[in-house]
Image 1: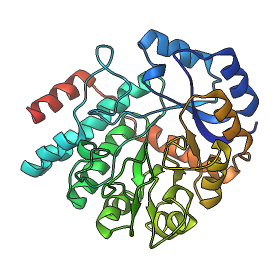
Image 2: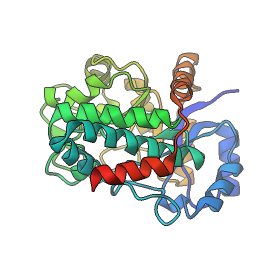
Image 3: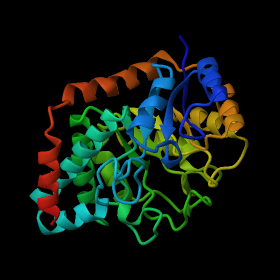
Amino acid sequence: MFVKPAIVGLSGVSVTAEEAALLADLRPLGVILFGRNIADPGQLAALRAALPTSVLMMVDQEGGRVVRLRPPHWRSHPAAATIGALYARDRASGVRAAWLQGALIGAECLHAGFGVVAAPVLDVGSAHDVIGDRAFSADPAAVAVLGGAMARGLLAAGVVPVGKHAPGHGRARADSHLELPVLDDVSEGDLVPFQANAWLPWMMTAHIRYTARDMMNPATQSAAVIEGVIRNAGFGGVLVTDDLAMHALRGAPGERAARALAAGCDVALHCSGVLADTRHVLEHLPEAGAGLLARIAAGFAAAAAALQGLDLAALADERQALLA
């Protein structure tokens, strides 16, 4: 059975007949859900049941302001910067809090049907709010340690973590949701957390153009950045694009996706949930190859091997005590 190397958005809180037909016909690897798709646990379970069993579910659930599973049905989780501040005072407690963050988020996501969680953020902190408190710290070494700890917590909960946004979004002075940020080059400091966590099963690209590497293309669509920087830093896992519907990129949806895969990305992420755009993406992509499917399977196998029996109430109490 063929699979298209894409993860796509849905329009609402249920799978429409048109979406069901498209998923059955063009068979994307997965879907990504947002606030528009999630109301409560019962609704989410019904949506999951309406999807083909082979379709994986992905979600952005970092903690802080980037969460899709929200109170009152799911726990509130602190921003990464809160954990980074604890680490600056007490390193052991900060590392433990980062692991707890991953374990608690991962367990909730797994229970809700998600197999892939777009976290941790490995970007080094900066003044621009597009990252802001989503970053653990402005210290690359601290981000490396805390990002790795959160990723291990996610794996312990049985989900696949996605480190983002390689090779580093922190210094960008523009929001890639709205426009294309441009930097002169990748900095050694930005790369530190990605190099330290090159063992992660998945990573996500940054929509940033680094002019010293590629005058024309953002990292997501640049072989010079993907092969020369991200892969050269030791990452051999699944490389997924950031959302291809963001305004940082140009061109029709399918063309954006095809350019990203031609440059070396493995999986195209298109989140808008606009049916015609989703179809255009899927029609422009080839069938996923055996090598990619093997790396995807390896990521899930790593999560299954790391899975622990977690007492979530006790872990939540421990995290609260550490951050009090």
